[in-house]
Amino acid sequence: MSYFNTSHFTNPSTFILLGVPGMEAIHVWLSIPFCTMYIIAILGNFAILFIVKTELSLHGPMYYFLCLLSITDLVLCTCTLPKMLSIFWFNDREIDFSACLAQMFFIHCFYAMESGIFMAMAFDRYVAICDPLRHSTTLSNPVIMKIGLALLMRGSVLAFPCPVLARQWPYCRTNIIPHTCCEHLAVVNLACTDVRSSSYYGLFVANMVICMDIFLIVVSYTQILRAIFSLPTKDARLKTFGTCGSHLFAILAFYIPGLFTVLTYRFGHNVALNFHVLFANVCLLVPPMLNPIIFGVRTKQIRDRLLRLLTNKGK
Image 1 (spheres, one colour):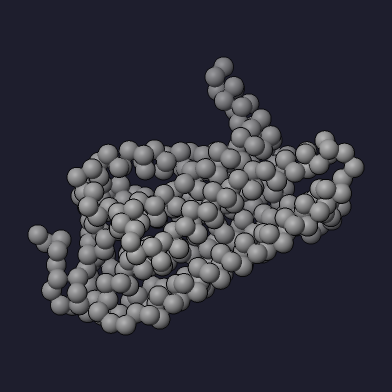
Image 2 (cartoon, rainbow, N blue to C red; image 1 turned 180 degrees about the vertical axis):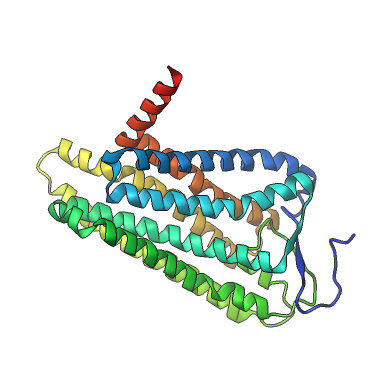
């Protein structure tokens, strides 16, 4: 078959994405849950953006960060899912070499950016609870814009070396990627040279981004909990903690699968490859799908606005 091209070349014009190795016969069935999650992610995140834009009472730091999160989620799932579905539905496995590297960049850039947004949201909750009088001045619109640009720049700077390093390696074994997308390690492992620099750099970035952001989130919430437990009444403590609930749920939905994926890629050599690929795709899809649901259900202002929109349309 043409897919199993093992001729010698140093810079392939295209790669072949296998999809989920060993499960090609049920690709169409696998597409159903992934397509459903993608539709929910698209509709949910656009709904968040529309509600915040049209509701003047939601023009505040917390909701601006939520809009940044929705935009990041839309980019993160859209840079991978359409190609995955074209593999599942139309057996369209080829991807241009440059397009593959671009996809690699967007995956890692916006994944790092999403982690940074959760860190920024934790800081927002810290200021809102521990220093509420200075909340609007500390997190003014220009400051939020600068934070967003800084997070985008951080993600870009950290992700850029991945495709740069991948481009320089000679690919003389095969151009077949046993994955649904151009994930960094899945690509560089095809090279017929020592790629430890790419592997170590990927591990360094993953650890630096995740560990640093989680550390700062923990520091923020340690201060938040201290402030909450110093409140005089139980009702006040529950009400204040309730404002952080949606953020905490979203953090868990993002970091727990992400950490599991990083660990299994590095140390889970006995884990089946198809499980690796499926779970990596779940990690890219589940947070964009769950975030608008979590914030929509648990944030009263967004929930009320959405109910008003649905009620008015129903009349």
